[in-house]
Image 1 (cartoon, rainbow, N blue to C red):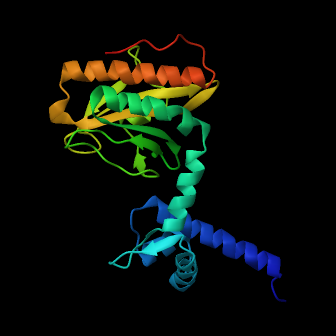
Image 2: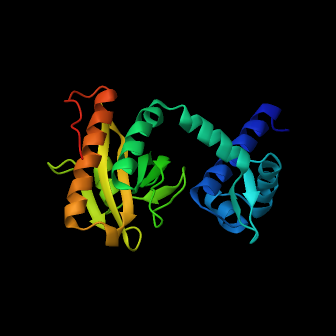
Length: 228
């Protein structure tokens, strides 16, 4: 008996979405690895990836690997740009950069023990940290992981040097809304430029911005102090 058309179409969509999820998890992924992770025969994966490529959702690089296509990036950026959290966080990110010159990020919990950058404001120094919106980073044993788990000391922020990336210092504070963690604000900059005193000053700033953003999301608290 032939499979109903609706069932076949649903299965095709499910497979395509599974492949798309694997493509988005990496900067570039081979056909074989993408098919393995999605549990599909390489021939089926290739057929679906070619369809996604023709629609602009997937792009192939010079080495033959697959990555997010322009249409997918455009749709993702549009969706993220409309989120209340991103909209509310933008002034905080700009203030952090204005006060420090270092890059500032907003992240949210992602799948499989990751955090996903959903907004950023790039630093103004000639040497500065850069990343891209939509990137997922592992959070195990990192400050951002503890922040997203609510494991924050009384100072209101966490800081660490040279953990996820060599020569990069990260300062992170959680953003809360009633009943849950909404995400985290982060400052990332070269370790050589952030000594202990600077780390404490920047940490206080990031914590205050995170507290103010949390208040805008409905958490009780005082108005943010002015930090020089």
